[in-house]
Length: 388
Image (cartoon, rainbow, N blue to C red; front, side, top):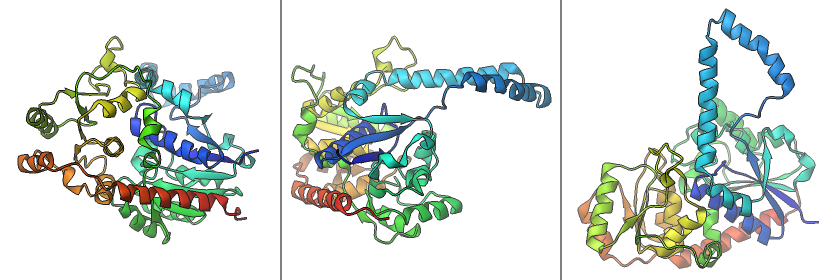
């Protein structure tokens, strides 16, 4: 029987990078001959049982009679919550089809549901799994992603390309203390950005190393094989995958389209569209996003993983820095591949002209070296005898 590995990473059903890094991590570990599943912690509270609904009555009485909060307020809050949850999963209608088909998951509402004897190893990563804001956004505690729930388990603990998202530590003093204690129990620690090594030192772990994002461990052919051969082509050749549109980004898109004589197209749901009757309401399928890179002649983005896939598919790109989502994640990737000049902070005509006139030549030999190093890291750490 194959040994079982549980992957602990962020909940992702509409984020292409989050979905594909989970798929890549699972695929790589399966190719090392392990049974693999993503431990999917629900970002929504569990539905109440009949007993919980009965015992909830005294609570509601206290809220209404003692705190003088009207039932209308309580019901309005619950209604708003239900609408938010429904909208979240409605938007994910098509991306969830990929998740359900390709990613093996163990869906839980609490880590207490897990059995310690089920796992040989737990792998934390990748993506911004150690960024507190993102962890809280999916209903988890930052200590969860340092394996607090498995503190007493006899299990291997490995961090693979875990990301803090930014080049500074955003933890509270208590979180630094608690996460540092938990990090000491890890058999091996690797981070995605060079700056993450320094943050690990702050947490008391001095042996952290840098590893490439798991999506880079698979080949272009691996991703092309996920897209049916008869898949409809996109109506354009300038892929614009932008998470947070700004005036500068719009100016960059218009300028590149004009200078390169390209037709812009998007593969993303529109945040301002609220009607389920509109096709722009739904996040397009993962396969369509991948097809976007296959069809594109040029890519404009503010997304880390769009940079990754532009490199994988050999498509020239520019990336506009998105400080709110973190810039450190771009810098390590671009420095490694010799593409640092493709990072913009605003609309800079002179710099864009230089990019458009420079042949696109990422350092693929460096990526191949990093792949070999990453696979050796995973193989060596997983094949070692488990520490007791």
